[in-house]
Image (tube, rainbow, N blue to C red; front, top):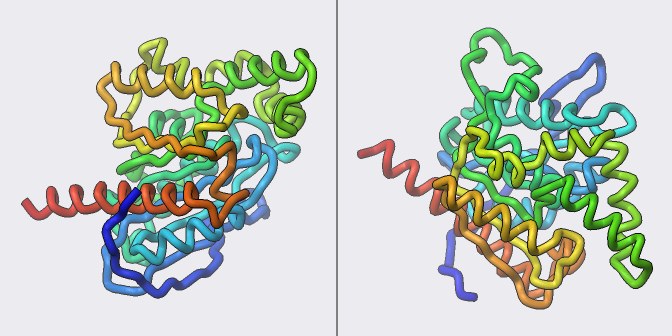
Length: 299
C-alpha cells in the first residue's frame, strides 16, 4: 500500500496529570509535534481487556503519529480491581473534555480532537464517540468556565475493537469449552471481562453493536476500523455486524483489513509490513479529517 510522502516533525513527549480522583492521579503521556499547528489531537486508549495495560503500551505508534503532525494524549484510566464498568468510560469522557478545555496548550483546537483505541480501548473509544453526553459517563466535572464542553469527537479510530462485549464473551466461552487449540488470549479475556463488566446485562448495555441494532440514538463521527485478517480473538462476524449496522444508520466507516496479521499486531509485530501500513493508514485518515475541518472553518 502506497502513502504520500509527508512532513516529519520533531516531537516533545511529557507526562501530565489530567484527573485527580480522591488523591489518585491519572496521567496522560502527551506526544506533541513541534510547530505552530493547529494539529489534530488523538486521545489514545490502550487495550488489555479493560483490566491491564497502560498509557505506554502504544508508544511506538503514538510517536510515529506525532512525527506526522498528529498530537496524541495517551491516557491511563481506572481499571479493576479499583473499579469496574463504567468507571473507565467516565475517565475517558473527562479526558476528551479536558483536552478540549486545554487545547491551546497542545497546539490544537477543540474541533480537531478525536479518539483512538486498541482492542478493549477500541470498544471504549467507540462508546465514548457514540455517547459523548451520556450522564452515565459525563460525571467528572470540569472547571465552571468549561462546563459547556462535551466529549464529542471529530473522528474515531478503532483498532480491532471488542465491538460486542457480550458476543465476544460468549464466543470466548464457546472456544474454551470446545478445547484447545485456541489462542492463549482466550484464557485471559474471559476472567478479565467478568471482572470489568460483572454481568452479561452490563456487557449488552455497553455494546456498540447491540446499541445500533436496537436503534438507539447516537453520535456517529467518521470512523476508521482496522483489524488483522487472521485475528480470531476479535470475531470477524461481529466486525461485519457492526460495520453493516453503522452504515445502515447513516455513519461513514472506512474498513482496513491486513493480510497475515492477527490480534494486537501493531504492538506484537512492530516491524511487520502490516504495522507500517496500519500506522500510515491511521495517519492518513486523521490528517484528512483535520484538513476537511480546517477547510470548512475557513469557508
